Amino acid sequence: MWGDAPSGVDIIYGSETENLEGPGLPMTKTLPLKEDAGWYMVNAQLLGGGDIHCSVTVDGETRTAHARGGYNVCNAQLSDTGFGWD
Image (cartoon, rainbow, N blue to C red; front, side, top):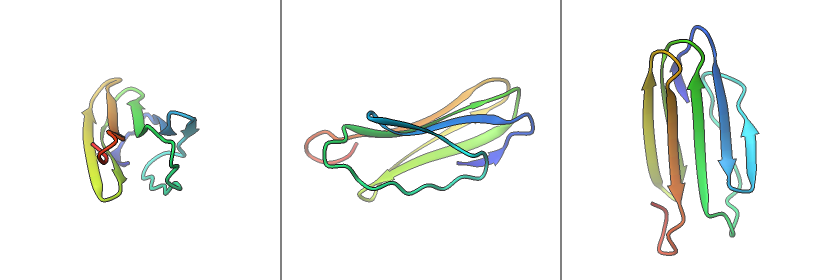
């Protein structure tokens, strides 16, 4: 997660079996890859304005997202398709 959120940002990240709260911006976290994980995500809601970017990387595959203004949400997620992460 990176960007500018003058009024703050609520961040949740993890997998379907764990929802962790983020400390704020900027944020970089590394989690151990769980063999039974179906997906990994980061979700951040702006609290009144800003411009943020978020990304998730698993096994070299990356998804990114962007949110700007108001109470918009930045959400990046990768799912295990059985044939890799997408």
